[in-house]
Length: 373
Ligand code: TRP
Image (cartoon, rainbow, N blue to C red; front, side):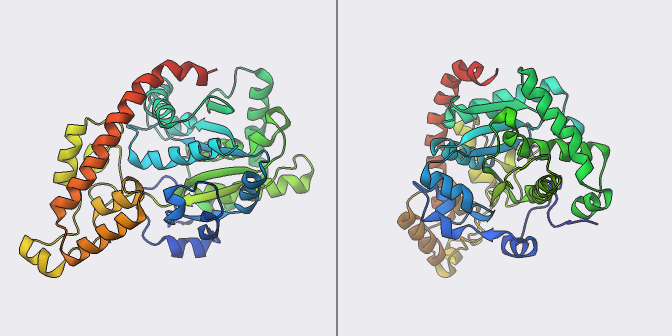
């Protein structure tokens, strides 16, 4: 069966992050939040809740030592506010000294039958890269690459595919089944390439051994566990002496309807290219409410911010002020604040963000070439 509770290719949403962390030995991120420079909201609010081996990365940030932030993206559909959570982290680490390796998982997406390689490339650039740039990613010390063609530099490219091609020796089929459950040739290939994605920044051709941080959603933890095991086995073998990669895990932002944001349902997410006028409608009509059936009942008994998606989005992204957020929480709970009013606050925040962002996204088009070597 495998770890069906965490399935990188699944569509279930995670119910209990604490339980999962315990089960898989993920440590609490909390103690780092106060120690990092200019911590992100996700750090302060425990939305980035877990980590493996983050200590050595925190140390690099503190002592201004070289480290890498490497992560990947599946170029599927529209870039939405859930994806923005990872983008913000990438940009944060770039700002705080990391060398960035950013992988477009087009081989994975292709083998999972999402689209053809040309189409995937287009989505990666127009949806992901443009939005990353608009959010603040800069080309300096940033290696943006596609799994389907690592680099124009033959030495680098050969090194990457040599690594990907020799990873399978370090893992058995039983181990793979225990981690992933149901497998297919496409999944196996994707896993091997992803292990290479995570480890290759430490090859001599890419700068040699140094700490590598992989910020991801919790669904990617099986890959991280496997990669760390493989890196340890390579050490024993004397071929490579990689530092075991570190990782952090963030909770997923809920979709408008309360479940997952899904690229196949535009009413489950807010895309960064959504027309601000449509966003108003999306939130008013579809955002799952923790309010009561009638105003009278709401005033009497109060709402439930714990299940309210408008509150959730304010907490995750759109209300940076802790005091104001606490007030929204207590006013909603007491019934002083109505669902419509809470939604209106979110709508205004999202609209003003989108208006500014979309201008930056237009301007970002001129920069794209600097990222594509
Ligand atoms: N599998 C990841 C996803 O589904 C994408 C990915 C590919 C990745 N290579 C990676 C993530 C390396 C982190 C590190 O989103």
